[in-house]
Length: 505
Figure 1 (cartoon, rainbow, N blue to C red):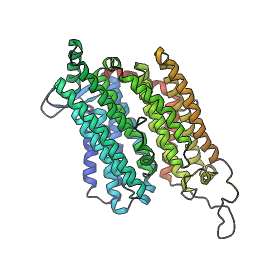
Figure 2: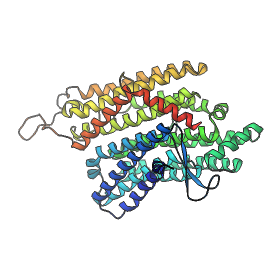
Figure 3: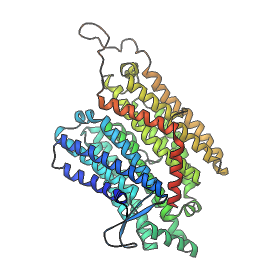
Figure 4: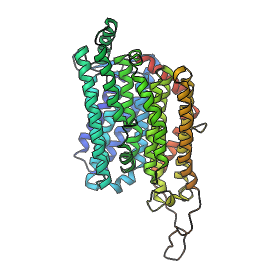
């Protein structure tokens, strides 16, 4: 076995132990350890991706001395390596971009706790990506939930505490359904490792037995993970969760956490239940309809918001709808489009949240539309970053969002019965995206209304320039470049996704 093949296991352990060690460190050392862990694990994920691309096949890594079907396994392939690397990049930039605000929003005595939650979140996301064991996946789903709640409530203000309670209630509902589904699956197949479970499911389908239990299993697992990822109408926890957390937490929760659950669902569809069986069960049609509803109604809710944080949060409801719509098409092309949009939304939503922080800094920390008039001039890089993210969400050419919508539109052509509703929903959603995102972009470059300026001590209404930290500027610039890369060099990434899904099957 090549040494690189150990990296998925090393990555999970490094992230986990970083959190444990940070519990006895002060804030600065915990921060540095967390950043180091993210960089090391991201580098390891890149090495795994390169290794799998060169060998052209996936591999399993046995943990301990017990082989399948009793032992625990990790499985790595092109799609796992690509997703882990991409998530690592987004997490690193989100943490760096929000460092100064983390220091301001979180009590100094609790800052090491914040970075413990970051480490646990990283380890759980890596485990969800790499694990080949269903019960291990459930364990790390719960770790992810606990870390997410910690990141939300760490500010200790009323709205963040309320948001954490809502998040916990909805997450536990989703986790409970997911656990019920796994229990039923284990009862029917007798396996928790994904590969043996898939063989058992294939035998059950061939024998024509347990038809109703298998339908219940597919439905319960799908609904459980849909609730945890915020699919409409299970989205009620999203606005407060994303809107009132720290900038780093908002970027990670909106960009990565929901996508980790969706990635796990895709793995289960391909590597446990069998994509053909899922399509035959008609569950994909339900996901398709909820996805279409989320695309449009999430945008309608976003248009109605006065607070820009809640507007950005509601846009996540619409974008998650896009992903489930692609999954619901029931074709390989639709799944490729859904996975690519996972990457698109992760990078773009993190860019929007981090850029918005720079705009709030020059607007007396206010988040309403009127207060943000002219903010694009007061902080040019943040204004450009928010504009790029907004145009990407609308689907402007050369940006990542354009490629996502193009992939969704072309994949719809392969589903004759779903082509028309998909194209109509894409058109309506794009128009709605333009209404609320471009309205805010125009606001950023509009002259402030007369009387809104506050006079200074010398009687002048011109405010002194406020410069964001170099960390936030670096993160915004890096996210802009990442978005352009996804838009201009999408073909190799799409090819890697197709290759990875083939390895899944």
